[in-house]
Length: 170
Image (cartoon, rainbow, N blue to C red; front, side, top):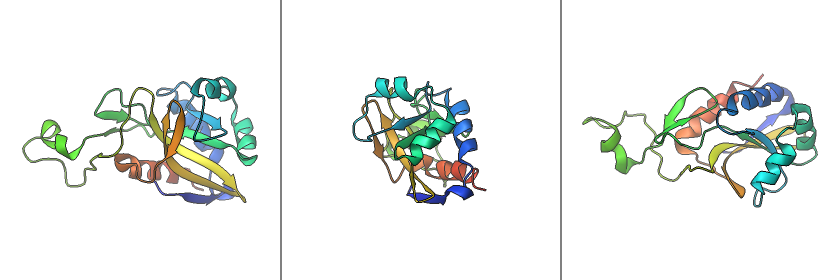
């Protein structure tokens, strides 16, 4: 998902975070947390420090310059199905696996194959939020146990993540 810059007054960020925390706990013990450095995080330390942060504290630290990770997906434990905080499940299937998962007619015309993403026991897809000049910048990212990588194209999750985000615009 490409970078979205949203005016703070046009985005219901409190509802976005509270909903992500509530629904995301099914996938990750701490589905929303603050990060100092995307390239190098100590997964367990991050959860110990920020795991119990409340939304007002998160917003304060976001405005002060920290990154905020908001989890969107589970880790793909039920491959190819991946559950997400929007309440839907999406299928991560490569084009080369089409015959294995679809009958003789193949995948539906609008099906999005997943060629470059891989979810594992310690990774998931989510959003990275930053705050600059009264705007919230939101990008898609992949969480790993030791860092977070910004990913512009999240393939099968692209439209669901955009649509979920749009549902919190004022």
